[in-house]
Length: 112
Image 1 (cartoon, rainbow, N blue to C red):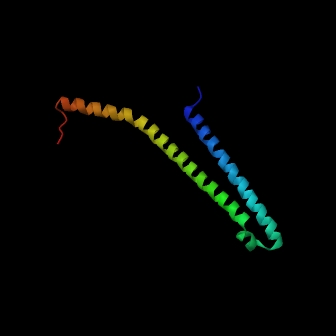
Image 2: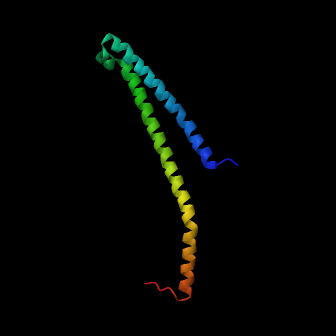
Image 3: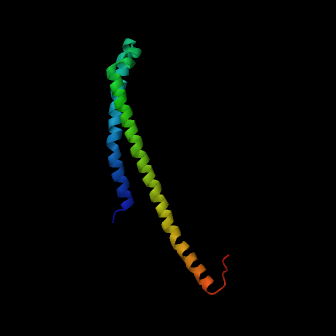
């Protein structure tokens, strides 16, 4: 049987992959513009151009979306790890609680 956690991670990655690809494409467009303007010595003009600002805003939006997606992914990973640790600790906590109740019932354990 496939590992459910592994399938979940693969699913989360498949949702993030298009954002990485979009960011890569947008950065390539901006790099191409830099190369074209660098050859002409007009980088300042390029930075002030509408097309560069539009491409920069697209890249910025993609970075922000990717950041939110990764934060959600990492938060979920952290939550899953905490739940796994709790599953390990929970049985011993239950055993301790049961033993304490037994001792209390026998009068061996005094509570303030």
